[in-house]
Amino acid sequence: MENNVESLEGRVALVTGASSGIGEAIALELGRRGADVCVNYHSGGERAQRVVRELEGMGRRAFAHAANVADAAEVAEMVEAVVDRLGRVDVCVNNAGVEKQQPFLETEESHWDLVLGVNLKGAFLCAQATARRMVRQGSGGRIVNVSSVHEDLPFPGYTPYACSKGGMRMLTRNAALELAPHGITVVGVGPGAVATPINRATLEDPEKKAALEQQIPLGRIGSPEEVARLVAYLASDAAAYVTATTYFVDGGLMQQATGL
Image (cartoon, rainbow, N blue to C red; front, side, top):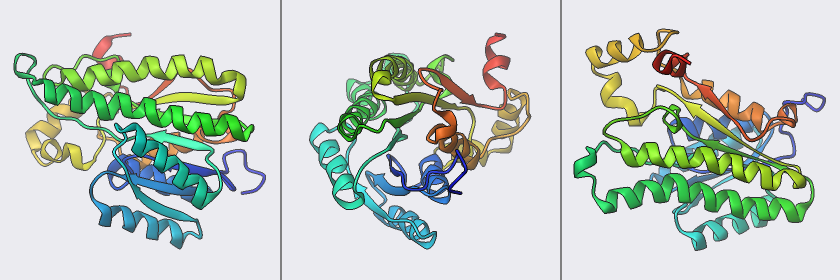
């Protein structure tokens, strides 16, 4: 893989929310392409350790680190742990996220704070902390924010979630412009309907699943691995000229929904 511009050999990546779902798939795909990985999690330590074991089975250096990404002190400690154990940080994937249905008129302040804290503040804190390290290293870097089609597409019943992803859209663009002089790219990835534990209730209901698939031009639900492959590309030298934008992995859902 040494001559492959999509190789991540010698790179060190931090992936938040990496103990299951899309985050797990991303951590494993980065490992397959040669990266050493810090597997961040907030709960589910045994699942995180399982991901670490899989990465180690590929010959990669890896470790799990529990941290609340909405807590600046815990984020700073996590980034220091990555540098102490793996030597540097080249890639930050902000994947940690919370999604819970609650009608607008019933949305509680605590729910708003939780979702915005993890999804948006967490992405900001991790991007900032890793970018500071990347600047000191002097060799550029990659920040990939895992957003959602709902950074553009309204999502009734999920106002805090949609607002957090809309904020992530502008976080990606603003950070990209400020970090460009340092050779650091910042890109968003917006999954549509993807088969993950968070969507289990819908996917296990035949009627709901069929209704969802009818909205998707490709007619099927995506897989975490399909999202992970795009993230791995964006983390590589192959995407060195890509920044300040969002790539949707949605089977055409955005175009079907908006008519754009």
